[in-house]
Structures are given as C-alpha cells and as structure tokens.
Image 1 (spheres, rainbow, N blue to C red):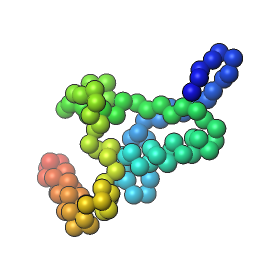
Image 2: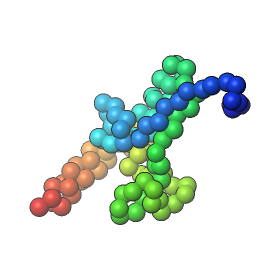
Image 3: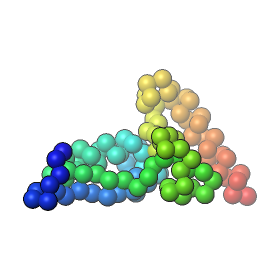
Length: 107
C-alpha cells in the first residue's frame, strides 16, 4: 500500500479481546480477527490496527510483553479440529480443567 497525503484512507482500531464470536472462549481470538479483516476489506477500510497481542507477564498489561515475537496463547483459535489434531475429547478436557482451576482459585 502506498501512503500519500493526497489519498486519504480509513481504518479500524480494535482490541482483540473486544472482538467476539459465537465459538470463542470469551476473550476474542485470531479466528474472529480474520472475520474482522474480511469485513473491513468489504467495507473499504484499508487498515486494521490492534492493541498489542504479545504474550505478557503476570500483570497482563499488553504493553509489558515478555516477547516481541510470541503471540499470547489465549488469543489462539482452539476448537475441535482447529488445529487439525485437536480432538473433541482433548478440547473438552482442557476446557473443563480451566473451569475447574478457576473455581478452585476463586475460593
């Protein structure tokens, strides 16, 4: 894309955690980002900008990344069949374990 002061462009800024789909785990993921990019292109937007999605430390600040290249694992799209070798049983097991861990931690 060639940027020029003579040609104006429009774009969208969105935090990934604010993008939701029916099948995400409640925090947005890269699959819904693909949907946003497709929608933005259809609407004529030229740029989609995100808040940082790097993996973070214990404070969860997107501006305190522990890596410049690692994506936060919570933003990966995980569903049965995505990645291809993730079985329904493994997916349900992992999801159940996270629910169990969160209820124990809350006590």
